[in-house]
Length: 265
Ligand SMILES: [Mn+2]
Image (cartoon, rainbow, N blue to C red; front, top):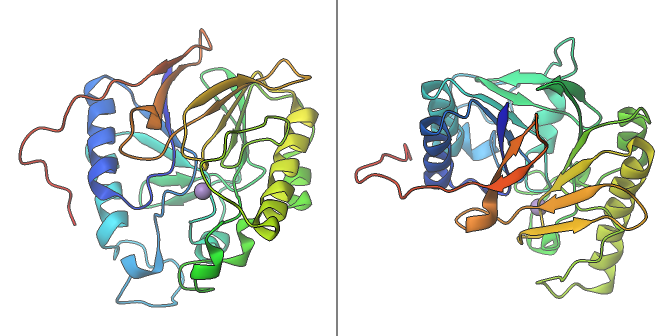
């Protein structure tokens, strides 16, 4: 089975629709998104501010995404990043398998385990926003964004083949494209340490991360795990094709969008 893995779309409807359509054209029926998707953002539900689960009344990015996924008959799964509506996602009822089904999209809460293509997957979303000083709590930032010890506990220690995280494990040193204040660096380090703890406990063959807006493939020191970090939207390294049979990870070649493609905004 080939799975498209992507992350950090940041509510970019045009990019989302283009990527989903391109994957569909290439016969890919599964997409896993690594967070900072921005679906179910409060402003996509202007008629029902603060209400629970206003499904079917979404506008903007959430509408465009759900419509594209439905048209492509794709199975679309996502974990949370930092820039995701954590308060809303926490309230959505869970299915028996622990996922949350919303408008044809499947949210994988932190600690969710599932099987796909014969492999054992684990989900561990979350990260800290380095620009949180410019954001407003409950409007475009939620304090639940950071990875916690409880999240790691919920995931548990049984072995995994693939760990899906938004943040990158702390055992890998990254070339940071941003200047972090000491406070921000300390907060980011905590989330990264928790992802590393989950990695050490579950010993996956592969970890997919996002968040740092760069494309990297690196062996995690002291482990047999290979880490793939994906770039943000509108960059060549934003998505990869993961083959569950061969465990290979290939670049996703995305043809330019046809003229007149609607973004649905
Ligand atoms: Mn992020």
